[in-house]
Amino acid sequence: MVEFKLVLSNPADGKSKTITVADAQAQSFIGLRIKDEFNADAYGFPGQMAVITGGSDKSGIPLRGDIPGGSKRRILLAGPPGYKPKNDGERQRKLVRGSMITEDIVQINATLTVAQAGKKS
Image (tube, rainbow, N blue to C red; front, top):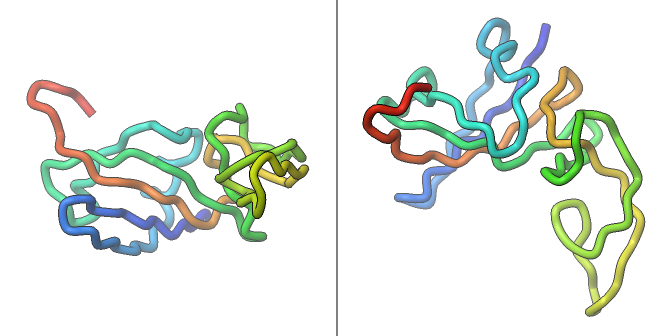
């Protein structure tokens, strides 16, 4: 059984809403990537779309949009997500995940957008 915590951020009022998504709704997220859109009607936001902005797995390893797939990789990072340098020019090799949502993901972060007229979801 796949289960996610979906954190929907609303930029209009600056608040977030955490929703537990399980079973069939959770299966619809499998295979989506960062920057993909989905319909937020089922999560209490009628007429709005949401864009996936990130997430993390059960170990707290963040998703990174510039890495294809859903596997873990150790890459050299100079900035977020996954690493916050203390000094200018500092880089470090860190473990991050690819941009695809898999069964190993625990939290999905998303931001609400207004649905455009005539656009199919």
